[in-house]
Image (cartoon, rainbow over all chains, first blue to last red; front, side, top):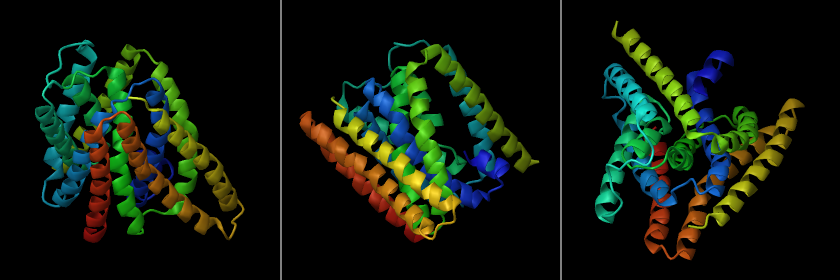
Length: 227
Length: 91
């Protein structure tokens, strides 16, 4: 969303980021409905992850000034690429690394991981979905469908918290946001319906391509800053 | 858990977004004087609607007898409010 608005529409990045946040909010509100209908959302996990992810995002935005972004970009380029490959090759219905049996342990682990995701997503400037989907799939043993559905609803709450901040600071221009909201409301439902109907292997391949692209963008930006 | 309430709520918000923002975009195209006010109000409503999903989720958890997650839904609501306040103050 942000590259499209900055490169194609020629918007300033400081104007594009708040608009993209409200777009994510509307996108999750509309795109998660088909996932909910097909019971592809773990609402308990949504609540746990969102609590800690929102806290993590705030910590991340506070740490932003002190952490060297170049190192993070290069590091996450590798992490994202590794996650993409692992998601592509790992089979469904495998044993989860983090079990749901012991609720306090599960809660603490899920919370800690989500908080780290929130911090990292905020530091690197990416939506949490890039991190949340692989974590749900690779660590929590959720199916690729449930991971997508759960992530679709989760990132909306973190984006809402960020959008509220931008809105009350006057950084979110409602006149720019209005056509974006209408477009996302129209496209979100169609995307959700297509997503729920897609075969898991197709989703894995699409996700792998997106992960490779993000890894390339992060790696390139990191190397450009380094050299 | 039965997600019917959340599905109905999301559908309602979606229908609102389509109708309301079509009107707002119409005003923007013809440079209507009400466009800034309507778009400002629309964004506010969307943000409130997004956060209000948690109240619907809490209701669903309560209906399912899952009081722990009902409480956690309200905790998330408070976390979002507090983090937004902190973010607004610090930025």
